[in-house]
Length: 66
Image (cartoon, rainbow, N blue to C red):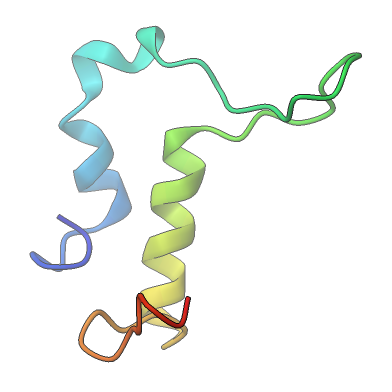
């Protein structure tokens, strides 16, 4: 939705509204207390910002190089 349909991160996240409490935040595999919680919402907002700043462009992104 964000890349192709040019929708905001908030709009994309709304689609998953019924399931928000089902998603577990990402954490790395190290032992101990996690100092941060990386959520799907964080990732969507990061992608939205990267597009707005020109850091990501679907048409020119080289998936093979990446």
